[in-house]
Length: 362
Image (cartoon, rainbow, N blue to C red):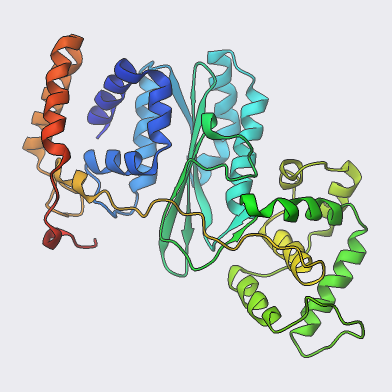
């Protein structure tokens, strides 16, 4: 896997430069195709963590002009240290990348909530300062993963539809506060956070009491039958509890935009759920509930290259794998004119479709 991944990276850099590498890693379908090509089944567990781990290892050993930080679990917490080392090597501003890393993780855990808990975060940077983030969350209830892709060249705002793509099964709804439809929500949220946290707490407790049959003396227009549906939605995502210390800090710092608010230490998913509930039922201001998934994980075609580690559509064929590596090693030594022949081969396979009856879950 390391050999083949390294050869693919070498060809990519030669053909498209480091920007082309980052752009492709940020494409959910291309990334999925790569992990299938190197021997992962179309739906194997570990597709993201193993593939990014191999890429990180290859980039560490060879100078392609791209480096990677982070990884799965404990390795993700090493991201700030590794970004400082990479920034030193490429003469970049380390603190800006560390801030970006934290904000990207906060968006996909706090600002966008679908029941998936992040456990993997890999940050790719090239020598020109462009970056790509590939991170993944797991929904423990349905035992499914979701992968989030970011590319610096596509990010106009970290909190307005910032993703290059999201790979996963589309859910019926998601607490999506980074939709373009949530601009009024973000503005009102900042206004609310500037108020005394005790006022927000009282409003939240009133709403919780309503679920137990309490009716407020003052009638608010937003209080109607849909409150039941909303409560159920929020409850399905977890508890709605305020971190008063985080909100007090946000007020003291007079946060002026949503990015700054998300970066406040202690402001997590539970606190945002509580604030969103207050905004919806007291102020009649709403986030989006549309799940922003863009790509279901399914480029099954590419598992036919060498097979899959779990045996779908067939076990990895080591002889074929060795032959492929040998061919690729020869190819990287060839001049550009000879590489044109390979492009012709790709045209032949582009229209090939896999046999539907061979597809099965692993």
